[in-house]
Length: 448
Image (cartoon, rainbow, N blue to C red):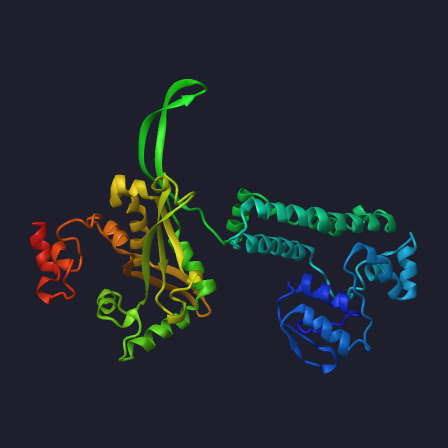
């Protein structure tokens, strides 16, 4: 069997698959190309590649497959008789150990154990995150799945393999420390991501996340009950602002293609038919000061949502104000949930009590930094500084009136932020005249 990546030859399919996973880091869903007998046929996953080999090339190769520890004896029967005898002989030397226990790994194929350990860590992390991304699973469910996989599959299987190696190979633990370490890691692959603290630490280590900014909105001294005695302590009203500079960098380096975004903006600029925000006068006015610089827009969206029991008698007590952002770059992805990201979250009662200035000050500073300093992105052509400018603030009437400082009561005589029509006229009017539209001049007159 020939590896399509490095063109090395292997004696059977099982060894080739093991080489794919350990050396090249391929998983079951990666694209595989068959290099046997100049076949060159590609397959979308590992399962289809196995079926192809068993049907088309089974006569040319000896297929050795084992899925559980009970198949070890069958592996020995299918291997060469000399190697099988060497496996059962307690005086196994290093060559027979490599050929039988490791299923005849090619002598020129030097397996990097540290690379294998990194692959195990990454696979465990991807496995854990895939369940955390599932909406109908709680954190407790994810922990249960991890424990079951460890207890029922990896731990028992690796324990059996380790016992067999210790029985067959004299001084196995002393001679093969790296392999023994690998087997110990496989016993509990989720050790580094089992708790929330460990998972967050691993994500930071892999540069997938960064610490959120905890915003202290207000601090006051309140009486508290401490071991049955009255005492006084600090009560903090807090919110959370996410690291937007880090998020923008990750989004445009790993999710979006910066060159494609810039090209899309240039094509829209030359199109007479307006189909994107970047073609409007408002955006052209905003980017006048950014000459010969890469500038991209983003939208802010905010809305309140209810946690716990939204229909209970204390429904509004746990209302939260969430602020999201999106990029109006591609028409097809503007409304997809995968392209809407969280910027910050606060308690709705805190926003109402302490106002926008205290709650949103740190978020506004973060947004101003994106516009003034930009974000340095790593691209194929080198490092590029991209400036992000707020295009629009989106939301329903209540959300927009709240964040923009307008009245949140729609019983006012002139409640509309677009025109100055009286609320009684709004009951029957179906048109709005240009003469009563709000503009900069009548707004200044009103506030004076």
